[in-house]
Image 1: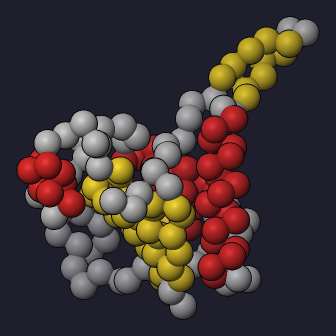
Image 2: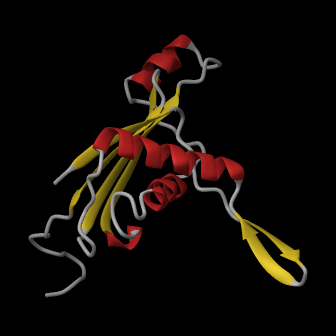
Length: 151
């Protein structure tokens, strides 16, 4: 099984929890924009993939392509280069935070836990249609593991 879905809008990264002390107890609060984006990812997955869910314990490969909006403040030449993929985003959100928000959002929806993701790739591009494209599939068994791993 392989599932593909798209989250419309600019990529968002996982926000850091805010810590506070209430009546002597530490409390972590997830930022509101993180919660909203996680709900959007979950909703789009369910809308586009239905009830598709990977088996508990399955080893998964998660691919994410984040398409950032092309800044209107850039020259027409730079905008064309961005659209062609010659110039790519080096701005926030960081790759790891984009991957984290997508993977966390899909816990108990696409799979039991994002710990099942054993292979992942994230790529950043510019586009006139900002979005995050996601593909989840079973992880391939590598033919050889150069530089480490079993064998």
